Image 1 (cartoon, rainbow, N blue to C red):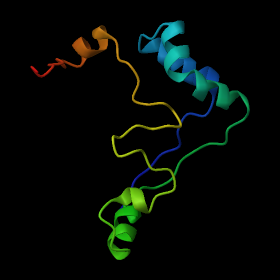
Image 2 (cartoon, rainbow, N blue to C red; image 1 turned 60 degrees about the vertical axis):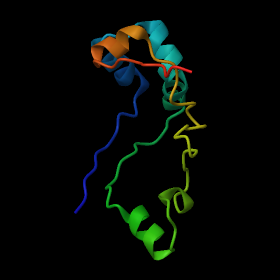
Image 3 (cartoon, rainbow, N blue to C red; image 1 turned 30 degrees about the vertical axis):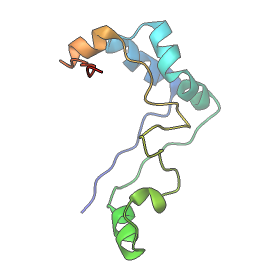
Image 4 (tube, helix red, strand yellow; image 1 turned 90 degrees about the vertical axis):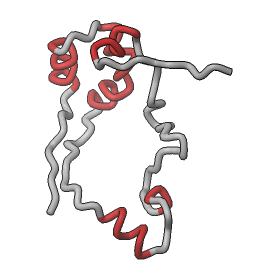
Length: 106
């Protein structure tokens, strides 16, 4: 019916894991600095179960989009103003993920 987990909430542990997967100190700071800073203030553990209740509530409310019924929706373009995501991605990451960016001809 649902699933979930407790996410990392220790900045030192999170930083170590970023290093293990190959991020440089500068990359860690650029991409995740605000999160790691928040952890230093004692952010509580975050976890829970995902049951899809947002979709059910949207249906019951007669809404076409779950963004109308969730507390912190992303914009219609899927931009997250809190974490300023998505952000720029490095060319190397695109290669690692086998993604090719193709610009439309105008």
